[in-house]
Image 1 (cartoon, one colour):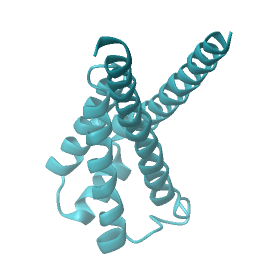
Image 2 (spheres, rainbow, N blue to C red):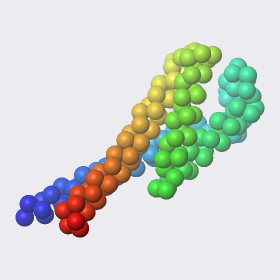
Image 3 (tube, rainbow, N blue to C red):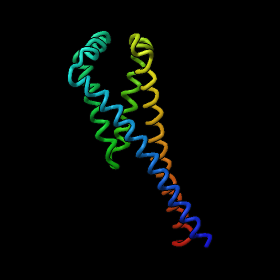
Length: 152
């Protein structure tokens, strides 16, 4: 009876962790697709932004391409950590650009929203890493416990 309750609790926890993982990943995908499209299509605002950074057009196209690639990688279990890594590197670059060259706010319409959104993505990526790396540790620990209790 106790083992049935533990199994039920474990599967419920596992399901909740999977839902949290997918939610975080899909939010990052939505943000990155929305951010990549204007960069890759040459929207005048992105051209102005990357010109100000001194990396137009290469930087704009590279950033948009990396965002699109990260979004695709985040959709698949085998590549989700690679996608999260690309997302993290991209957002660190964006945050550093804001802090060193662009400023927090990109204009009166922005009000610091892009800067804040970069931090939101960093938080979501951190969640993806935590959920996936800690679940690997739990699986290894459970395997070692099983091996110790039943195989040895």
